[in-house]
Length: 424
Image (cartoon, rainbow, N blue to C red; front, side):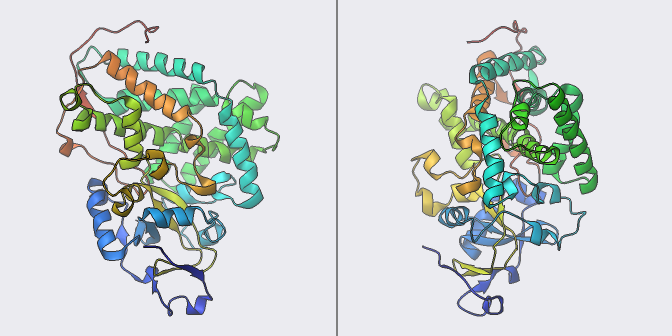
């Protein structure tokens, strides 16, 4: 069903031909109950509300969650009516709100519009384009070998804490040219952005101080890395702008990439489509990654926008400057869009968002290369790896944005550590 869309004066916004979605009961998407079974929640939202639903991102913090693919595409491709700048909304929000560091205004491409957005995005895209893919593959392979060697003789491991997270952390920091004495502080603060459990001021202060230290280091000692390329870019970013570009690099790299690898491994360890018995030969890793991006993407809800005026979409009035958030998982699995087939993953998935704010990772191959190499290195060395508990016992971390497991425990036949120069 095609949604209608128009703008009107605020005084008529909730009285003519539509329902004020902000007046309806909101569904919390931040708690453990939602994290344990989001599919059930999405199905109930569809039955009750249609392609959009009123939700809470935190207690008392309302938003409109888009769960229909066609509606999401329309909103993502209409930055004029749905700008990403949150500053007007932010004025009425408690500055101590735990999730605010994830969604507050920053002078970077994610939260900007117009010429500012163009400027920041150009620097981001160009800095990523300079990554040497052959060198990146070697880095992942060597890092993976070192991580696997630490637990391969034990016969069991938690793949998140012992493999995927430290691997991603190491590789991303090498790409950014960030040394260990700074990267640990940045990683700690970045993780707290997603978990939304710490004081906002404390998190931002720790993050900004660490990022400023990295910027100062790279101004004094430039290298072949993303941070140096940002600093040397013709758009001439100042130190504050540099910090906010780097926030995006860290937050959009470590947590999402970790979740992508973990969620893909979970698929390959539990889904019959990825067993030899089902196919005679297991499907390749790239297919598993693509399916994960569609069915269980690492970020479940994001791409926030704030309607510039009251606007009618699909029979609902959305209030001006109130957050609209895209449910990537729900939209990717919208029954009206999929119709039961497996066609065109990249044509239908919103794992990277869409429109002018689509994540540059869709066009770049860095993230997919890291995920592919990390998974293949693990399965090459430990081909008989298996989930150590029933899938129903795995715990998903609560939070309004990510789709992330607490742990991924596995068992495997113990093997001796391999030389660190191994590889295919």
